[in-house]
Amino acid sequence: MATGARNMPLTFGGEPLSVDRARRMRWTASGLLAAMAVLFFSTHAAAETGHAAWGYVNAFAEAAMVGGLADWFAVTALFRHPLSLPIPHTAIIPSNKDRIADTMAQFLRENFLTPAVVARRMSNMNVARAVGDFLVESPTRGQVDTRSRITGGAAELLAEVLESLDPDRLGNQVRSGLGGQLAKIDVSPLAGRMLESAMVDRRHLPLIDGIIRWAGLTLEDNEETIRDIIHRRVAGVLRWAGLDKTISSNVLDGLYKLLAEVLVDPNHPLRGKIEQGLSKLAHDLQHDEATRARIEEMKRDLLENPAVAEWWMGVWERIRRSMIRRARDPESGLGEEMRGTLADLGAALKQDERLQIQINRFARRTAVGVATRYGSEIVTLVSETVKRWDATTITGRIESAVGRDLQFIRINGTLVGGLVGMTLHFLTSLM
Image 1 (cartoon, rainbow, N blue to C red):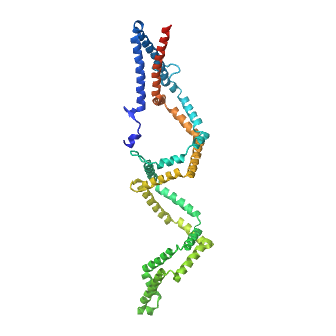
Image 2: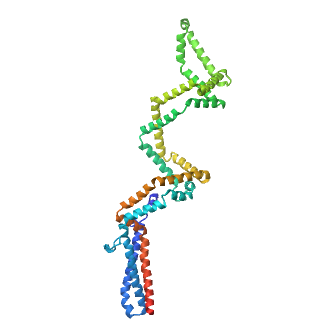
Image 3: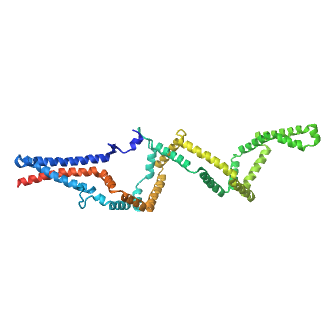
């Protein structure tokens, strides 16, 4: 059966099955009452002139008819006027609709929504363990994986939220939030400690190698500029003799050779100079006020630079579109990652007692807080909702909920009345 069909209420003849079953039971009770009436009138003459057994049958039918009529009147009077006659104290539920609403609200307030009751009921509940069991439980054959439904709904909700919000405004809010947090952070000592720690662990060596390679690539990209500078600086005689080209080539070759030696020799003196410079930089970033002030000024300039804001908006838009695409794409792996996360969360909730205590305490405090703050509003909502129902609506809903059992009262009244009538007939025959 499809999921949508399984979640729909069962129907019979286009109406909810509970309403139809109540109607059939009402016809059954009415049919039994009519049968007792027919039996009474058809056996009345035989009871006076025929065999004595007919007297018991007639007495049974007479008392059953009276009992059935009495219970029909009582049951009908709950919901409407019997035979549409304005008999006093009938149509009890429609006439007392507002009082029923207030009574329901008061019952809800006193038994469910007081902080003491909520706390007492939740003290015996292990909410965290129940949630853990729910998340860990694997679906049986034919059942829908609840985690898949949760993750699918969450992914679609995330996509809808990202699409519905103004991307420029949201991006600016995220940028402002990040900028505000970065503005509060003293970057200079943090960077100094990071550099110092990297040097202690020898994790700065790849940085030095990267600097050397970068210098080599920069030198290679600007060879013509360097040659032109040397050409302009040397004496005219050297230019006339063509020695400027030889000098510039020797200079470039020497620089390339120096960078190569520094790159391959871990003990090269130039590396030591670079490390000394990095060590001094790490110290100044932490302890030199002038250096810290310059870094803070650079940070402020960077955060206030319009180019940075424009760059961030482009980055944010790419992130937003990527998140929407991944949320909507069933093959993206996002759902599988979320299902795995939920399963891990469920396992932790099942096994970690300290986490259960924390979650249960939070759930209890939240429920008590909701009852304290919004209990009156919830009760008022229930009362006003019921009061807004018209008489036909509230009668139909209550009758569809308990009407079948009320028809059993009619049937039992008919049968019990018949047995009482037959018993009375037996007792009077002994006199």
